[in-house]
Picture 1 (spheres, helix red, strand yellow):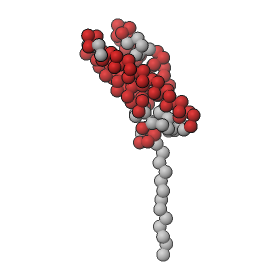
Picture 2 (cartoon, helix red, strand yellow):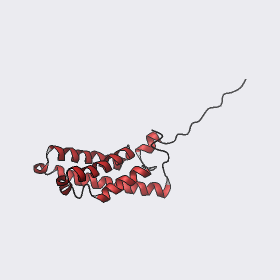
Picture 3 (tube, one colour):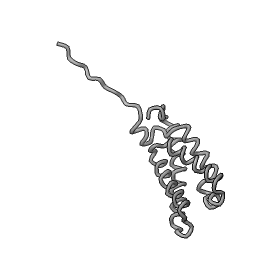
Picture 4 (tube, helix red, strand yellow):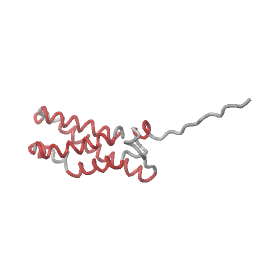
Length: 134
């Protein structure tokens, strides 16, 4: 996992990444939950995309496996545009190119220091106790 997470920016860059993650995650959560409330429009493939968007949105907000789910989100958005143009019109606000662009930026930048990824996979300070010599 260390290859995925080389740095965890702190300070203002970390706060900027947090704001970016919360903005995209909240957008995905709100709009996917709005699609879930309309059971008439949910077919199997659309239901799978909505549940994927809910999971990705929650992962963005928490900052858990951020680069992996951001890459999956960007690929899913582009795939819907190319393989199911009818779904793209239904999900126009959910899979818009600005959402895909932000997901791609998060994929390249990482989660930041204020995330579960930084807590679980961040740098650790190793303290080696001194051994008393006789």
